[in-house]
Image (cartoon, rainbow, N blue to C red; front, side):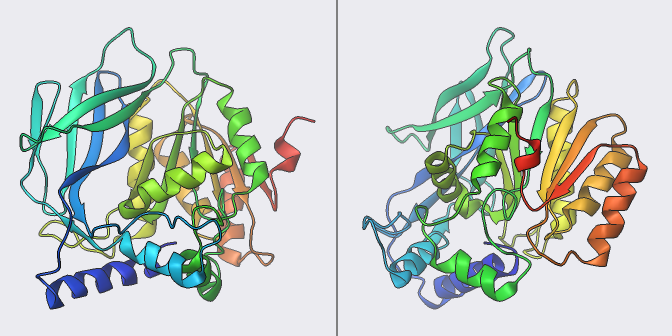
Length: 327
């Protein structure tokens, strides 16, 4: 889903916009992302954009063709991002950046927990957009941070051709979510422990991923995805490791009173990222869990797994999570 493939799709989308600047788009709308909370604030996130009419939606057919799926996936990137749009929520306002992104920080109430929704408006539009955020329970014992590709959803990122095929021809209905991953997240969540997701998937796929999660019964949680846009302050080729590192640091800082379980796989250097996290945040990582989707784990992954073991942090590595689930 992701990485180089998404970069290529995004680059094509930008090229089409340059070549066909008069292409018609629908009305502006808020693309909502799940927000999160720190000890004293609620962070609401989203993007203001417009789409092609009737584009960017999951195909209506129960058994869509490969071509239909490909067009639907491409349409997710065929949007017009709106800059300097004023977004208002709960008496506060902010402006969207060059790629249409915005963030609003609200005071966190002391007596509220769980998911909370807010109505947000932009440029005096009558129809609000709904933004939700997770406020972790004070009874949480720990938090969970999980990768997505090949950790929860079969993507085969370790093989470029298989990754390309799975990413561009699959629908929300056809994507394979590992059943043992669903059970593992539910077990660790235990109806109280917050779950966060980090991925190299672009923000364009937030709603698509959320639909996959809902269909599979995965616990809902704030996602920290990737911006593939180009602006004065950022470039498309963000390093995968540094991006995931920043996301994990943000989650740990927002939940300073919790230890975390890190879940990933051996296909995208998660072992190295998680080892570095342990080094930067001593005593914050409760356990590391890695799925090994590629039958032949490379030497680099083995080295970083050994380094994690050397820190004394409990680690599990296996082709499935079945050994971790209660009988």
